[in-house]
Image 1 (cartoon, each protein chain N blue to C red):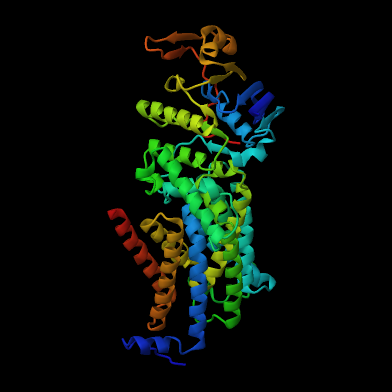
Image 2: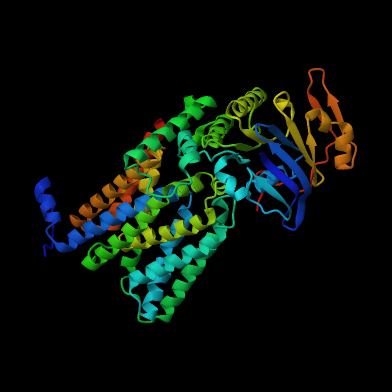
Length: 283
Length: 273
């Protein structure tokens, strides 16, 4: 393996080097899947103002990983189970509300605390020490396997198909719950299903970006897109384009430098958001 | 056919009776105002007709059937405090959701039939936006619009699905007086032209005088129905509230109701379930 990849400032040669190793190809594949998946779900999340719920779900990877390790489950399965359980717990409270999402922050905060406490408990019960804590928190792209890529792809395709199927009723209930309910849309059920989709997106993304940096693809790209356009489809696609840009540039930069990938994706995502805000505020 | 018929209808929320034994009919093409002090149950009455709150007593039929079956033929404008400033969606998107917002399935028009349907729905949305006079700002983010502009777009949203009944909950609330009269005239004109029955919840009957067929006055858990001259009298309202109410008529024909008791439980904006 090339120990010291170096940037030659020759686009063709640099790209060839980027794709020279299977681990890097897998990382790019996984990154691409995650960018599309997270940005599409993230566009709805930002519009629904559920970023706090998304943040809480991302932290649930901690009890997921430690709890999984305690009972001998694969770490990624632990992610999905913990995130799903937290989504259902939060959904139980949002579905009874007519007012929207703002008033649920206390419940979400409680779920977050309980989740983190459970994670801490699992960690101390499991004296065998959780390996790769740093990877859990900040992500890596070195270890993505072919099997993980296939799993990610299946989950993303199924979840995005569901999102597309419910695209209009979900948008309607996001814009005005009362109107959507009066039109016969099962608003409460959609709330819970959307949180579960969000949980899937967060669990999938955190395997690449790490738990703490999920927002680099989940929030910043769609939020930047919404600064630039208020057309639904254009915003959704622009958000996905931004997320792809952030992930590809982040992976490439990390490959050619000793600095970690999470730093680069987050920095690029921040830059995209700041630029979009500046452009958006000028209009 | 009766558009709305309530017989002995009562609603209880949180163990408290909001109103009971309300009898009310709305005929095709009728423009009816729902009046009464804050907390009298005006919004709750509308939400009962929309099957959003259950009846504790009596029954309601809408467009000849159960309320939940009539939803696709009702245009609704909920009571609101306005869209959040950060709502990044255009007015025209909101109006289009009035047509296809309840439709499941991938929102891509792949077949010729689907494309034709989408085109005719978009034309319909553009027509109602034109009709309510919202065309100049329909492509701006809805959160940045004024209350009156948002209200006109919401009326367009309620009209876009060819409703037989319009339920408008305080559509004049966030408007200044000239705009209140303009929107009332607009609603009257649309109702006449398209043959739609309208139930409009209002605080103040004055902007609506001259446009209304009948009024429903809610108070003390009961309802009075009739024309403005029949219902809004000192005698009738005093009997409804069980406390002295005076009705004054100004020289230009405006009505002033004095002495209405405010109901004790007022929640400000939307009613919780």
